[in-house]
Image (cartoon, rainbow, N blue to C red; front, side):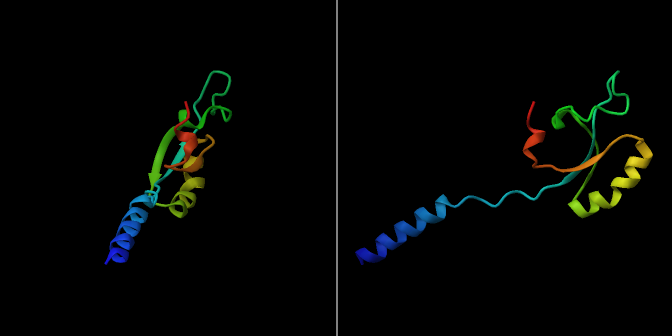
Amino acid sequence: MLRGIMLSIVLTTAIGCMSAPPAPANWYVLSPPATPNYPHGNLNSNLSKWEKVRDFPNEDACLDQLRDIHNQLHRPVDCVASNDPRLAQR
């Protein structure tokens, strides 16, 4: 009986310590901000300052449209996951 209680406590504690799986990421097409010195976008700017042009449900869909979006904007663009830590940096 005591063994069963201890096992129950250990399992409950172990399950409670497990972290939740990460949220699925959306993917963004981002373009660097234009500045007077870089009218087509400053590639050295912090990624969190890049303009969100469009979003996609997965990386493949983002990459599939990347060239077309680049050709429409005539500016550099890149696919970035919504959970990329560089987006939170300021």
